[in-house]
Length: 420
View 1 (cartoon, rainbow, N blue to C red):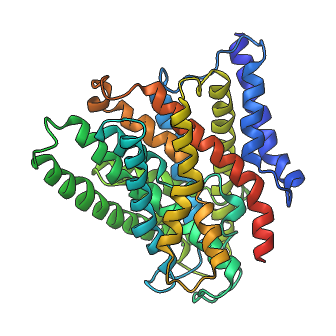
View 2 (cartoon, rainbow, N blue to C red):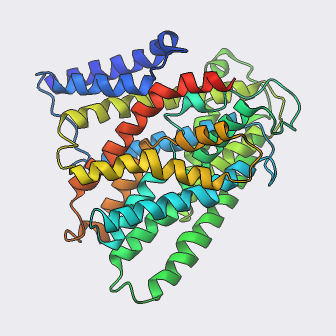
View 3 (cartoon, rainbow, N blue to C red):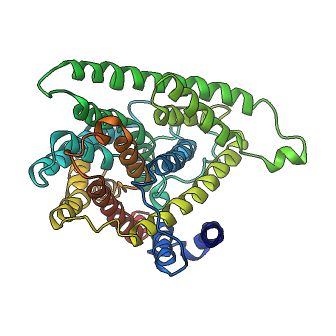
C-alpha cells in the first residue's frame, strides 16, 4: 500500500506543479520539463519503497501512456495555428518535413550503422525514433493561443512569429510522418533478406501511400463533422459551461480511434482534424475554450510522463549507454538536426538567425518514447535479440531526450526574447 499512497502523492505534486510552476518560471531561462524530470529523479531516488518505472518491463503501459500524451499535444498544436493551409505560407513547414526530417533520419541511421555497429534495421529505427520533434515540450517556442483577429489571412512577415509557426507546424505533423520510417525499420527487421523487393513494395503501398492517405482523409472528415457539431450552439446550462472545451479531447480520441481502426496514421488524422476544427467558424470565441482544454489536459499528462522519466533515470536508464553512444546522441542534437534544418531552409526568406533557431530547437521528447516502445513491441524486434538489446536503445533515446530537454529549457526563453 505504501507504493499506492506514494503514487498518489507524486501525482498530486505533479498536478500542483503543472498549475503553479508557470507563474514562477515565466520569462526565466529554466523550463517546466526540466523541473519535472529533476523532481521525478529525486522522488524515485528516495527510500520510499517505490520501485522506479521500467519502460522495457512495462512496455505496453509506456506505449499507451506516451501515445495518449502525443495525440492530445498534436490536437493542441493544431488548434494554435492560425495560418491558412497553402504551399506558400507553409513553405518552411514543407521544407522541414520534406528535407530536414528525412536527412536527420538518414544521417542518424548512418551514424548508428557505421559508428555504433548497429544492423541496418536498428540503425533505421534509431533515425526514425529521434526524427520527430515534440509538440509537448516546446511551449516556449510554439505559437500561442488562437488569435483574436477575425482575419483568416494571417501570412508570414514577423520573424519571431515565423519561427514559432515553423516549429509548431513541424512538430504537429512530423510525429505522424515518422511512422512510415518506423514501420520501415520494423519491415526490415522482419524481412527474410534485405535483398528481396517484396517487403519494400508492401511498405511503400501500405505504410506510406495507404496509411498516410487514410490519415489525411479521416482527419479532414472527422474534423469537419466534429466542428459542425461543436459550433452548432453555445452552452446554455452551467453544466455545459463547466465542460467548455472538452470537445477538443473528444475529437482527439474519436479521430485517433477511428483512423487506427481502418489502419491509417492516427497522428496525422488528429492534426488535420485540429486544423479543420480551428478553421471552422474562424472568429468564434469558443476556439479559446477548445485550445485551453487541450493544453490543460496535455500539461497534466506531460507532468506525469516527465516525472516518470525522472524515475526511469533514477532507476539506471542510462547505465547501458556507451561513450560512443553518448557521442552519437550529442552529435544528433548539436550537429545532425541543426545541419539538416539549415540545409532545408536554404533559399527561404528567413534571416540566418531565425534559420539557426528553427534548426536548433527541434526538441526530442515523448514522441520518441512512443515510437521506440511501439517498435520494440512488434514481433520482428521482440524475436530478434541478435539485432540489439532493448536497454541499449532506451539508454540512447533517453539520453537524446534528456540533453534536448536541458538544451531547450535553458536556451529557449532567452533566445526567443532576442528575436522579438
